[in-house]
Length: 277
Image (spheres, rainbow, N blue to C red):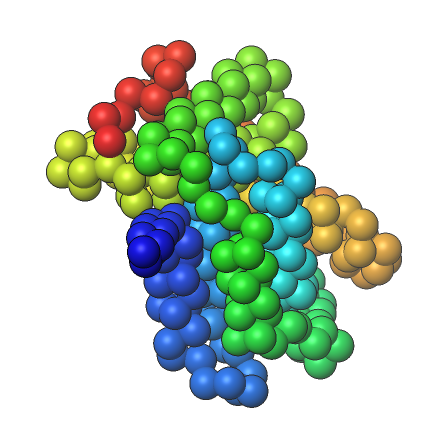
C-alpha cells in the first residue's frame, strides 16, 4: 500500500517564493546594487518572520539555528546598507538647516561619502544565491508544521510580543525597545499578509506598514547618531558640524517616537491578535 505523500508545508512554500522573488533580478556572481541589498535584507526579515510561525510545534533550537543563519547572511550586507543609508539620512537632515549652515556641512557630508566608498571596497558580502539555498535546505530538513492551526497560534504569539514591546517603548522611551518593537511589528505585518484575508486585514496592514516605515526612519537616525558620536566626532575639524547635526537628530528622534506611539495606540489595544485568519 502506497504511503500518502505529506502535504506541502505552506510556510516553507511562502519562504521559497520570497527567496525567488528577491533573487529574480540578481544574476549569480553579479555585484549587488543598493536596491539588491535592500531586497536581500527584506527577504531575510520576511523569512525570519515566517520562522516564528513554527513556534508552537517545533523545537526552539531548530528555529534558532535557521534564524541565526539568516541573520548571518543579512549581516554580511549590513555595512554596505548602513553606509548608503547614513549618507542619504545626513543629506536629508542637512536640508533642514539654514542655507549658511548647510554650506558649512559640506566637509561632514564629504566625510560620509568617503566612508561609503571605503566600505564598498572593504566589504565582501556572502553570495545570496548560495546562502539562501543552504538556508532553505536546512529549513526543510529541520522544520515542519505539526498542526494546521499552528500558524495562527504563531501569529498570536508575534502580536503579543510586539504589543508587549510597544507598551514598554511607550512607557520607557528607550531606543533599543523601539528597535525591538520594529522587528516584531514587521514580523506581525509579514505574517498577517500571508495568513489573513487582505480585505479584512487591510486597515491593520496599512497601519503596520506606516509603523514599519516610521520606525525604519528612527533606526536610520539612530545609526547616523552612533556614527557621528563614535567616528566623525573624532575628527577635530568636524566637531562644530557634528554638534549641530546631533541637535537636529535628537529633535527628529523625539518626533519619530511620538508618531510611533500614536500608531501603537491604534494597533495594540487588544491583549491577543485582533485579526481573523
